[in-house]
Image (tube, rainbow, N blue to C red; front, side):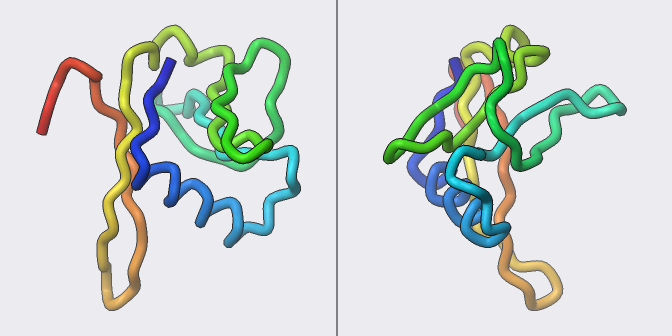
Length: 98
């Protein structure tokens, strides 16, 4: 399963609030057409893995990428681009630091 850092959990909550996500939806990681991992807001589907916080899905991992993301850590860092504050999420192997 994926480990979610406290900073990443806070960032995911901010995304859900900003997009006014319904209570049953979370931030979902899924395969992108270019072979990467993308984020969307969606409800869990059959076979998806879900990380729950405070009685709601915080992070939903699409069943198609669960095995690929096994043992990773989701990080988040604040950043500023063109005077706008934002967040950058990234996945890292749990055995790797830095």
